[in-house]
Length: 22
Image (cartoon, rainbow, N blue to C red; front, side, top):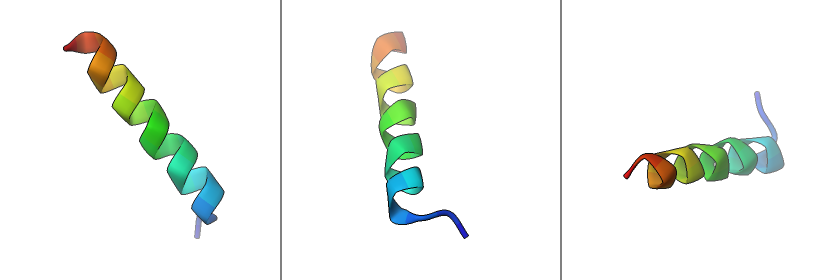
């Protein structure tokens, strides 16, 4: 199970990628 930090990092990364493509 991923730690909270890892999950947050992935979430931020996904949000950044999504934002850049929008």
